[in-house]
Image 1: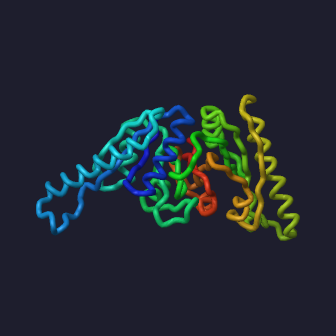
Image 2 (image 1 turned 120 degrees about the vertical axis):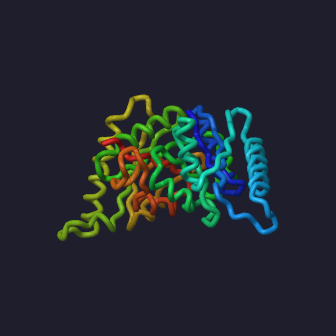
Image 3 (image 1 turned 90 degrees about the vertical axis):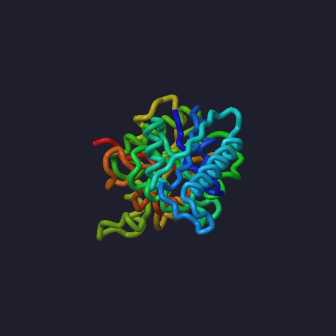
Length: 290
């Protein structure tokens, strides 16, 4: 199993690399640290020759990769790659295809809150077109003391059809030897669809439906997986997610929007809202093949 870590010599790059190390140790995977240089870069006025600037930039990028590799513990297999592409996101996708990687790992943009996710332009592009899973590191992941995954949370919606997400979550749980938590969110601002509903009847009906979904999912899991289920309800998605408890080393897995193409990612509105409040790494899984 190979993980492509999209890297820049920034705190965000260090966060993504830290998550890559955590996943590699937990899943028995190898890391490919990838830095993508732009194909066409404006030449500063102080450097009059294009080739000289490109050579300088390339040498600096190689130095950054050497420094990044030196931070990876000896028990993790790591390689480095330098590529050029007009798009950083497309460059990562091309490398992932070339290496037959199973996941792209990337850090939050630098303007987010510590311990929270912040989607920059590269991550945003990948989350709407990638054809493999993406692991997102919250800002400050580089300060985590966890060496391996402690537990895996799988966030299920109230609709059927989360087969691929469940299989991926079970696979991560098994390889990491970590317990699995199935969670269904009940945002009550979306559940009042019957005119006869009172706030409490809407809540009870939504919770009952979520319980059915969780039980159906749980009944299909292997017996050797330690699993628990939980329903989190709130006035909206953010308040429901905020009721969940997290520890260092936890991660959450979510599925793509119904609008996604088969076997591709597409960040839906619910997951976008979850990203605002979830303080742990998130893995987004592509939509299942139709």
